[in-house]
Image (cartoon, rainbow, N blue to C red; front, side, top):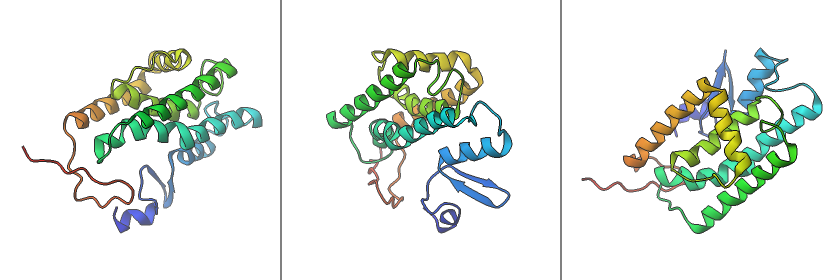
Length: 194
């Protein structure tokens, strides 16, 4: 929430990429930039227009629907004065239904193709927050299989995510005092001293 941070990202959000004086916010844009600059021929962000369109679509779906609906239910109540509601749960299930449909219709092993792309990274990290709060999403068979295959097939990436789950679980057990934070959207929860 500082002015110095706002110079890097006026949205005052994380992450921010700094590449030799070039600042870029939004994780989707950061992943696209890294692929374009450092691995332009990578299958992670394919050059073929239709293949790239599917990756871009899944990134947009995650940004517009999947992540916001899931994180409002999973993460916001951990850090702010917010409750998990039936309406929030309905939105989570709607997002899961849509992603399940995309996986079913495409019929591939990954979110946008037969190989790992940057779309899988974003969707996986959104889904991971469900595991962090012990939310059972096993009835979504395609998502459940895709998620568990990611864990099995990409152990180095899973290790990063597994560590993030541990941090989330720590904050669930020990809610942080953010009363000093003048957040522009969420009201800080008042932590009662023990």
